[in-house]
Length: 88
Image 1 (cartoon, rainbow, N blue to C red):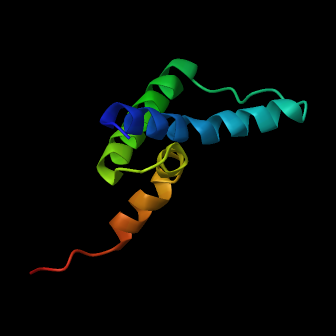
Image 2 (cartoon, one colour):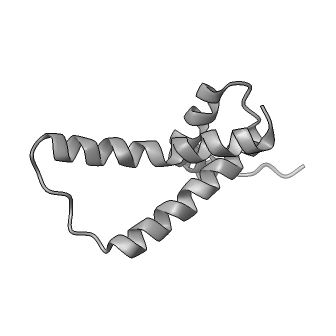
């Protein structure tokens, strides 16, 4: 996959969990949370761009793997933060 394709699939994977959460809330007949939508949208955009960049660095060989990288970004970051660097 090209870098643009990796970025696009990672970006989509970064946004997908939020879309699924909002769809779940609406499908149960509840109203969407009262958020500061411009700030939330801006932060979601930053997160999705970060997911796209991580997907480029990961170099997935299929679109599904690019989606996976984007969707699992919080777990990847948590793992990196919890693992102490080893001096060489």
